[in-house]
Image (cartoon, rainbow over all chains, first blue to last red; front, side, top):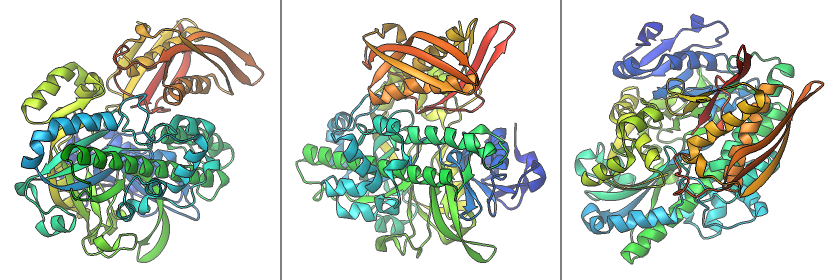
Length: 485
Length: 143
């Protein structure tokens, strides 16, 4: 079943959902994708983009990235910018796992140097970075101290010695969104989260040791600027978010906003997962502040995980993390809403940009990028399935058409239960080990659910982002070691 | 079986439908169906710890929504895998109330066979309705 009949093709990579597709749309929708990707996209994406286009205050278009697929409220891959004056904020445009994101760190080790220690590295990382359910992080703090963590983010971690100053510059928002007030989050959220700093979680969250093979470098110059300088260099990439804390914040405000949406603000409800409130309302402001707390928790979580990774490498190789050149390349969020300034119809406007399963990809020279990346554009980290590989990309100036947003991952094509029926976790683990990917997992059935065949082809997705002018491929990494939550 | 997992509703997540003669049974079965997403062997979860819950809402449907969230909360806050041990539902004026005892134990990933975590109970296609034969609900959880 193809969705292309419902769409108007604007160019090779732009597919429009006309404003008259569904009553109430305030702007048209646009899906950025190749024909091949469009052919495989679910019907539900079109419906969901059209629902997003009905949200008050939306400007330009409701966008969907090439890895778009069905989600709650917004599709995964959904990007929508609202006017900060008369627009709304919607938890459904951010996702339950607020600031789910990716972090990439390089080493100066080659695959040959690392290979003999791979098993030890993976097993140690599996021990030091708890995954699954019930794994408590090594940062033991009181609930009161946790309030500081959610207000200060990765900065809190670096102050405690869990990281380097330069890590902060190389993190979106420098690891802390300002204006996060812990008074806006519930006790339940604090209780769910305060023992979870430094934990990976479950589902599609993972920590991977990867190799940058020379044949997989797309742009030598950019790769060098991002720290990929040696053939077969070993890097570490991980994917996780704000854990139970963020999930509770999202759950709490989904209900709060749903209660006031119709009764207080007279907004029509097209999909309950698209609950929203005016950005300037007390409820909208409280959610934005609580969301920032969850964003900061996720930055702190990934900062502590990075610290643990450095510890493990230092221990295994008997050299310091500095000596091993373990610099963070970047940390990007892919479930977030932020205030940014963008050009719309030739005018600069202040907008609340929702990115849900979409990554910010600022082009060269843009404010908000550290000095180091002013010439290159922002590093963009896109995770694939545990079998197929992941990508490092760079933001480009032509990204302005989507408020400088690009894809975030590959997206599932097979349900979890189907994957479980087709694949056996233990067999898969053995097969992957035979193929040179050493895996340790908190759950065999969970591993089966994450089999490569359950995902869209990541190569197609990243190629589409380049063809659509959203981001540029820099390097592709192949996995050699994986910790699956 | 009083519940069934549905493949075609949420590709990346888990959906299930529950049927029961009474509303009390439906709450119980829905909780079990949900927790079985997290651990395979709910039958091995012993009632070592109890937690009391008191909830109210202006709709029965949202009461079920809140009720299911309690299990997700205790899973993270105290690492507890819980089952519904007893439940009392009441309807006073415009408000639906629930008093319940949840019982279970701290997760043992090996013994209980941990599968995948649940991040949240979603409201996507969520419903609770009375049918000719009893009660029915549909739940989608984000994993």
